Length: 192
Image (tube, rainbow, N blue to C red; front, top):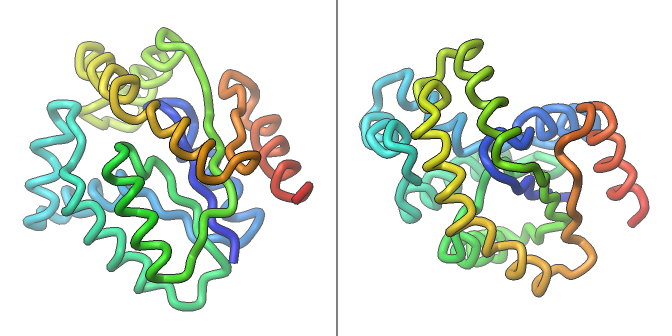
């Protein structure tokens, strides 16, 4: 089993790369954002709660996210592995995630960190907001707040994962053509 974490600020291309790599390697793509959005669309209790946080550019609470993720993993008993897209986002989530994966005997194989500058991210997200209709991608202040939260909370996980998995933490320039990024990710996986 191979388990990958795709790491990077909002708009870095995590979801795009997770889709490409999941198809190329037959891995299950797990996006907490997609799970939340599906619940919002279906107006579930979780969706209503998640929407209130997401619309303000805030993170959904850790306990709620971990429980949801655990149930999602249990629904794929025969998967060859998983790509975790946009999770974990905080040190507490990373520690809880490690406990969850240890319980399920699913160690992390690689963490890929997609790296880009803030202005590029803002422009990407504003364009995505026009195409997708996502409310959290239409307001520049909300976008910049999401990036600020990422820089304050999530970027700290780089050191955490470098200490935990060493050379299996790989930084990738996210400001390249989509195909070049995909090839770089696949090449790094095949090298090990």
